[in-house]
Image 1 (spheres, rainbow, N blue to C red):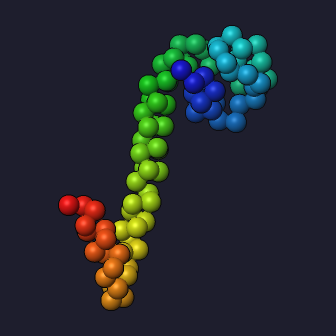
Image 2 (cartoon, rainbow, N blue to C red):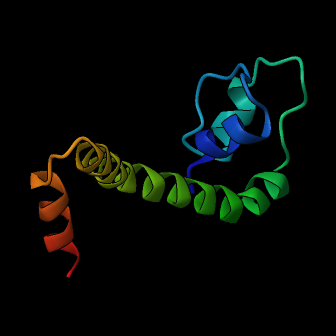
Length: 91
C-alpha cells in the first residue's frame, strides 16, 4: 500500500514528511487538517490503485492514438504510407 499516494488523493497538498508507514505519517504530520485515519487510508487504497491503473493504461495508449490521428491527417492530405503502416499493425 502506497500511503503517500493515498494521502495525496485524500488530502491534496497535505504537509507531512514521511509516509513509509502509518506511524511515520502520523508522527510527521504538519498539516492543519486532521491526519486521515488508518481506516480511511486502507479503505481508499483499492480506489487509488484503480485510478492509477486507469491512468497508466490511458498513458500507454496515448502514443498509439496520436499515431492514428497523424495517419488519418496524412491520409486526408493524400499521404498513405502511415495509414497503411497503422492498418497493417491491426490485423
